[in-house]
Length: 236
Image (cartoon, rainbow, N blue to C red; front, side, top):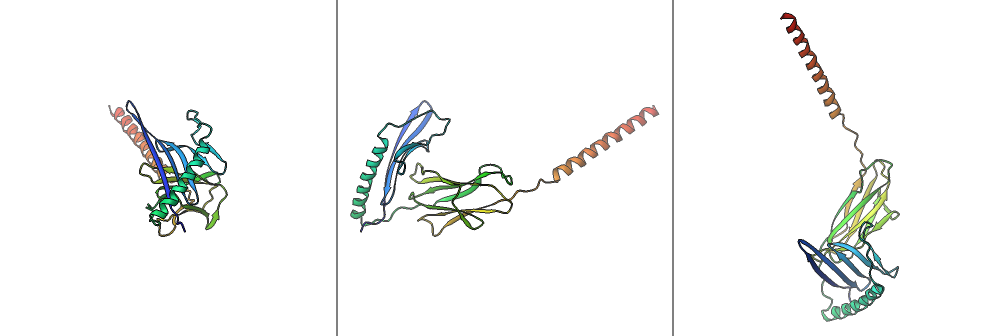
């Protein structure tokens, strides 16, 4: 029986022009159950194969110069997956199910915009520097699982071969609500959870009080100085 394994091919091309250095990346990889085929530039994804939609999807931001891969790119990605899985099977049998190198992920959670009660916002869970590129991510609100409004990014590959990804959750903050993002990965002893509690602090009275006292003392100082100036002139 063939065990679970991972087979990755990462090709990087360094392009230089004057003082600018750019790294163009192509990644194709597979496990016994899934796979990845993507192009990137300078650590950002340009496009990836969408196996469900059966096409190559461009993921460049709207402000970037328009760019499109040729027809047949998706078909090439499918062929690469077939080759990858065949190589994975041979390698797994030849090396007798070798252990897979692992790197535990790091994660953080934060809102996209300043939190205002009752105003829709987005929570971001950023997971970084993990390997192999498979993990499970779950959101909760007040200890209840949440799936509505959740969106996960494609994997982003780093120069060292590790991966990053984002997960976002649309939410409308209410005082006291507690959200969590839990990541499960083979390199972790258990799940890793990050928590975000909705807290909107009241504006401090300190600055207003200090400004008021300072202004009052300043006016008193001006009045006192004017009084002595008048008295001095009367004496002369």
